[in-house]
Length: 412
Ligand SMILES: Nc1ncnc2c1ncn2[C@@H]1O[C@H](COP(=O)(O)OP(=O)(O)OP(=O)(O)O)[C@@H](O)[C@H]1O
Ligand SMILES: [Mg+2]
Image 1: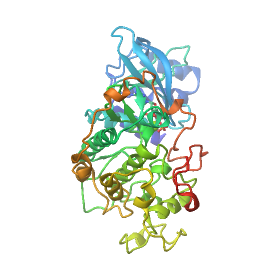
Image 2 (image 1 turned 90 degrees about the horizontal axis):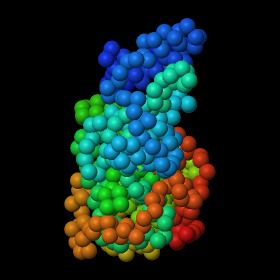
Image 3 (image 1 turned 60 degrees about the vertical axis):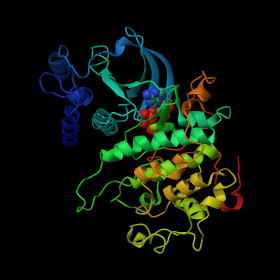
Image 4 (image 1 turned 135 degrees about the vertical axis):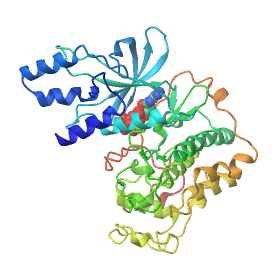
């Protein structure tokens, strides 16, 4: 029960009722209550209470279509019955929760209430169904987001969507702008991948899915002990794979580099089936992991416990050259996908890279997207990409770009 209380307190930061009691406690307190007498007491107390920041307003929306199925919730396209505004509703999955409201949703609410920027998805409101006798006083919670017509994974999976070099520059520019903003606000995303980048029909990109985000400690002196079980495996940087717990914005830059390469290769470049295999794939393109190229790597917990390929040279540019001819693009990628996080380029310097300032300059995606009137989401693609950090061994069903050393030429 102690951890329930902790979660209730966290929830209170966002959603409080008039009695200063967390509305988010409804579900588990009901479950804890068990018998009919206590359930009635609960009902008496809360049935007529108003929750101004979290209204029972789900009936204001008509669900139109399911557009996303994540680990932490289902996402629907929906229309507000009065304003007719189209929104995305993310239903909070409570079924698997043993201890109250999901921590990932609390994180998402917390950070998205703080972060307001054109390239960050806008959280409009939080709403819920009304607890009633029929629902056994359980309510379902929904996060209401601005609606985006596509996600980047859906667009990349469709060969009819053709990105020119100028479009790719525009995509990267927006991702990096969003990232620069969140890093300036001392927030790490920790789950960057193409499916978590939304795209509007006018070509505006939005970083989404802040369920794994966290604040960066501003004190430089302390050793942080963040969890390293974050970031979908294919986008996870080598320092996390080696057990680093004192990391920073550079973890997001690695994922951004993987996404940048994918804009040309059209499939994720490093599709390991396990953490060990992921490190092997990384070594095959970035070279062997050694203290010479990455000072202090030997101090990481797993460095001496994992077998690495030895004597491999860095071949990132060579291996991407068949797909990427622009030398500035290759140079920027090379700096984003550096093994040593301390040497990896940050969002600010990446935005100043010649890639964005030499011809052809970035060009809006709006015109290119005009003929694509059907939404493209990862959910609708035949092969769903990546896996959440919690399931590193999930089935691989996207053709890898770099599969093994033997077939590193284009394999799709
Ligand atoms: N505002 C939105 N507009 C349009 N589509 C959205 C929106 N938010 C989410 N989606 C779609 O729903 C999918 C899942 O959403 P999200 O990533 O937030 O959920 P999740 O449960 O955290 O996902 P996962 O665990 O798979 O990363 C996204 O990949 C995207 O396709
Ligand atoms: Mg997601």
